[in-house]
Length: 512
Image (tube, rainbow, N blue to C red; front, side, top):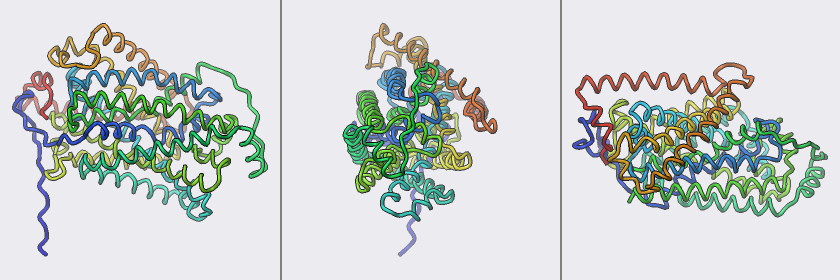
C-alpha cells in the first residue's frame, strides 16, 4: 500500500486589523450542554476531593474538625467568580474565554496576565493530578494482595512513568477533537458521581467507634486523642487551599468557541457544574469525617499521603475498597482531558490575536482542534510532573495553582465592573444578570473576597519555612509572569510594526 499523505494543517498567521474580515478560526461548534457540564465537572472533581480535605491536616496544622466550615467559606468566592464568568460568557462566547473577557473589558495586557496566569496554574494542576494517580493505583493493589505492584507504584521511576502516560493519553484525546472529548467525559462524569455515592453511603453508614475498633483489630493501635481549638487563621488558610478544589469550571468558558448556542449553554453549564460539584464536595467530605476521626487523619497525614478510599479501607471489605479506590483513580484520570481542553484554548486565543507565535493557532484540518496548542500545553504539564517528582510534594503545585487562579478570578470580577465603560457595545450583549444594580455588587464582592484570599495565600507562602525560594509559589509565579510579559511585549511590537490597528482589534470579538 502507498504511504498515506500527512493531513494538512491550516496555519493562522497574523490576522488583519480589527475583528471584521479576519479569517475564521477553523474550530467546530460541536459541544452541547452535557459535554460542557462534563468538561467543568470532570475538571473539578478528582484529586481535590480525594486528597486535599485530608492532607489539609498536614498543610494547615490546627484545622482539625473545621474542614467543612472551611469548604463552605471557600464556596463564597467561587460563586462570585462563577457569576462573573457567566455574565461575561453570555456576551463573548469565544475560545479562550478568560483572555477574551479581560482583553476586551480591561486591556490587552491585563487580559494576557489573567489568562497566562490561568494557563500556567492549570498546566501545573494537570501535572499535579497526573502525579497523584499512581498512589490511587497503589491503593487498589494493596487490598488485592499485589504487594509487588504496590511497592513498584511507590518507586520514583514507575510513579513518574505512569503519570506521564496518563497525561499524554489525555493529550491524544484532545488532539482528536472536542466530540471525542465529550464522548469520553460524559460517561466518566456519571461514573465519578456513582463512585462518590458509594463513598458517601459508606461514610455515613459507619461510625467513628466502628473505625476505632477496626484500627485496633487490624494494627493494634488506638485513635490518638487530640483537642480541637478554633482559629480564624487556620480556617482562612484552609479555605484558600480548598478554593483550589473548585478550580476547573473555567474550562467551560475556554471552550466557548466550540459550544453550540454558546450564549445560553456556557453560562448555564457553569452554574450547573459549580452547584453540583459544591454539593458533592460537602457530602463527600462530611461522610469521610463522619466515619474517620479527624485526630487520626491529622496524625496519619504527618506520616504519609492520605486518600479518602485509603481511610475508608479500614472499615470496608477488600472488595469494596477496591471498588471505591478504582472509582477515585478514574476520577483523577478524567480530570485531565477537560483541563487540557481549557488551557490549550487559551494559547489558541493568544495566537489568534497575534500576541503569541502564530503556530499555536494552527487548527487541524480533519479534527478541527488547535493541536499545536494542545501539544505545547502537554509539554508544560510534563514539566509540572517533573517538578512534583523532584519536590516530592504535590502541594507545591497546588499553591501555584491557587495563586495563579486567584489572580485570574480577581481580574474577571474587575472585568464585570469595567466592561460597560470600556466596551459598551459588548456590555449590551450581556444576557445573564443584565442589571448594573446587581452587576456592581457582585463585581465588588468578587474583588474583595478573591483579593482577600489572594493576599492570604501570598502571606502564607512568604511566611512558610522552605528549603529554597523555588519551593514558594509566589516567586515562581512572578518569574513565570516576567518571562510571559517579555513575550507579550515583543509580539505586540511586531504587530505595531506591521501596521495592525490594535485599538480596533481589541475592541471587537475575535472571529468564530
